[in-house]
Length: 235
Image 1: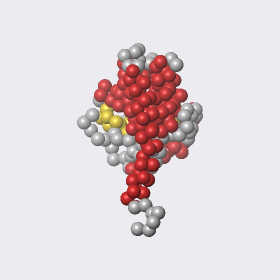
Image 2 (image 1 turned 30 degrees about the vertical axis):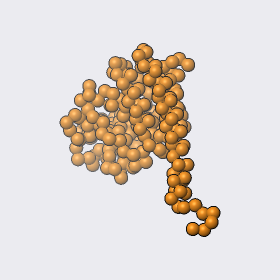
Image 3 (image 1 turned 90 degrees about the horizontal axis):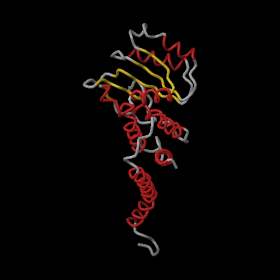
Image 4 (image 1 turned 180 degrees about the vertical axis):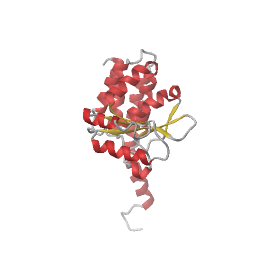
């Protein structure tokens, strides 16, 4: 071995240590933030309206494109048993529906079955007629009949597009296509299942923290924990 050269094994170990240090620091920060939440347990749960406000603040963070999917998925994680419906495993963030064969970003089936009865398409933009027409074509090709195909958007809803979507009910043999905004969806769910509001927030937190990069990066994960702590403590 030439003088001044390090063994390859030592270089590898040092490189791995350097790469793992930011991960360990992130995990430590997350554990500290989560620990602060646990110490506050036993207090009165956030109200439905406060929960809507908290999730809305979180959605305003940068790199939030995955969050609308988790907002809807958390509802079924919290209340799926009461609805006798199951949330199917979520596809990875950047997977196209054509690649996965899925009918939507969030797919719901009945307990004991595997056929998709409700599919949600999440959009960070205004829903267009083309979006609706593409969904209708997908529904028409499906092997089993869905009950609902729902768009959930973070933008304003065009009444003409909403009317266009509603007009396919008979043509699709009883499948409803509708356009919702995420605030209305979340608010209605939390008030309808008021006693599940704490479970909803826990489910949403779990989904957010379990998402891998880059779907949900470290920054929005830490942001949610900080926002939740502030909301629950009044800080």
